[in-house]
Length: 194
Image (cartoon, rainbow, N blue to C red; front, side, top):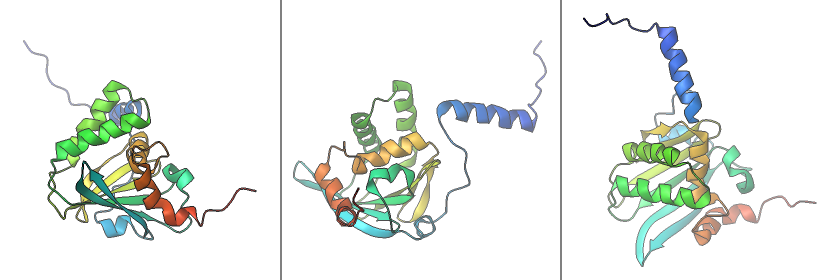
């Protein structure tokens, strides 16, 4: 005979969820803004660059940041990075390439890499030329993603967000010329150390 089913009380479910999220490095935060314009409020375009790979134009990248944005501390500030695709790509391929680039910036536990890959694969759609995926870094919360201005979802993990945006903004990026083009307008205006 099977034991009767007893649902967990709501408080126990919330405690269990907070334990799971806490151990996975995920953060719980307020719901993301439903539109890109709301998510980028106060942000202005500060730089653009084009990614070419093996002679093919892949996407144009645009960095959005508030006045006073400091590239040396990008992970501590809110900003947006928009990729305007110039060719058709599969979402799974975008996710795979992203995790490979993230692994080039830091050592990632294999189980963590699999969780992040699964999260990106679930979020990133197949894109056509002209589609725009914009990521918004919310410090202490994670990354929020928008397709053509409409919310796709988020990865509520600050460590993920720092490494993901590091693909373009870290000094260890595999595309230093692209990074330079994205931040060029800020480099000349950055305050100098005494």
